[in-house]
Image (cartoon, rainbow, N blue to C red; front, side):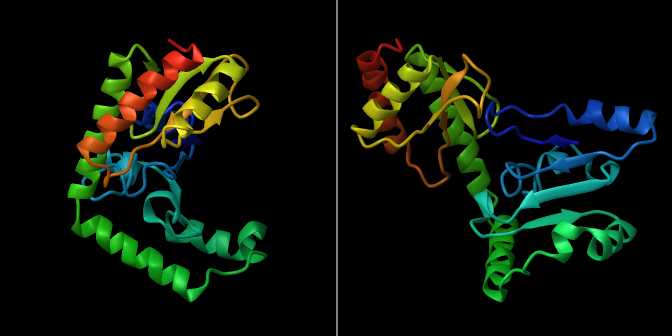
Length: 217
């Protein structure tokens, strides 16, 4: 069981190696595409699609929130698996069903994902510009996806950086233990496809000034 894109480090799981391991041991692999649905892959189906591994993964799960902007979640797999879950999974049986409007919103979002791949390309460009710009300021920006962890380490300094950024109209929350391991406090930076290059440059200027003010650099 693995995330495809990890939410706090912004990195991608080694899916090909995990698929091979599962096949060697006659096991099922479950992949949570919560942070990759609508973002990765030629049709926005996630990291498994991007790496051509969809058919070799037994269980795909993800969210209708995040990139799709709605509510709820999904499980995809073989018909026998879905029948079992519908009849035996207590978390499904005893959960209130999605409202029709939420289902319609998810369907409309999936239509946008399929019809407008330029949105995914724009998000990838914006993430690359932001990550490279942060590094140019001497900041420790990591990850290889649209999620960019800006590593700070010290809890107080991470909070100070977030507050200095907010004063400059940039909203990037400080993430601290127990959400992340001790000594790895960070800011979690996530651009949108609709951010312009000018907006990103203004944000980068704010990061540089706020990092100096808070003693991060």
